[in-house]
Length: 345
Image (cartoon, rainbow, N blue to C red; front, top):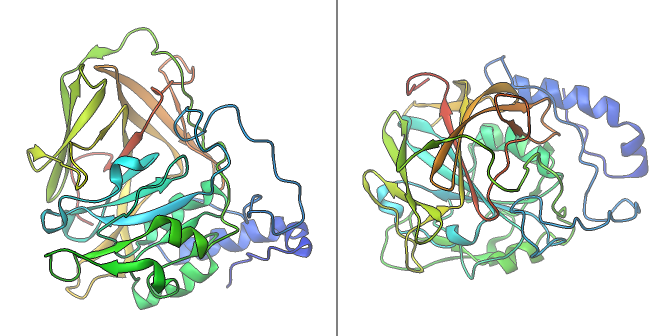
């Protein structure tokens, strides 16, 4: 079975076939309970001859006015103690926190509205990334490597592969940390390696004033099997300040990381067929379907529901009465935690 990512006119006419083929292929690379289908992206940076869509009035990732047509870049970043402090995370539009082997977590930072000077430590990709990324069209995807069995799925996925292996000139080692915690990348150089990366598009986020209700909340702690991340509301900075393992999560550029909106998305976590060299299995995070969520904004916690019908579609968040759950304008963190107790598959 193979993917269909033909970007020609013929490929667009065969989009229906691409949906079916990709759905089967991604399911095959998981545990047999794959989270749905993805189809070839409709926006591939203008390489099909289709007129570029009109720029949105506000950025679909942040609700702001900046970088409305800038290409989308996703970067995998280490999120364990030896990697801290990280570079470039504070400039991301969206920061996903994903469980990996051993109950630890790794970040996938998504950039479009602005770029930092450098980002890292850059680390390897995971199978859950390939289930999250199709909603962005065909973004540029930066990472430092991948398990050999997963390479074929990277090649067939709707991303521009700008890994260290294929875009090495954009990567460099710096600082006193040992390998693998000293690999960084220049985002501008990365995007030069993917000149047709997709522009931003609607991924289901809604921005606006806070809804009625909500529970006044000073902080929240998200838990994975081997680590925690906390977010404490700062009225002075009008954002949630992040902590890692109980300590402030500081940025290499200075200050503490954190976002205007923090989404705790409870998603089923199962075992994929991949594992690391120690034999620890890679979690597969199921990000299609429906589930519950907690949205933190403006010093309050709101109960919400998330829904994503397929992998080529975005994730919408709604209030208990079914209305869109608006986010605060600015950076969004999405914490993907198991729906239940912390779980090592």
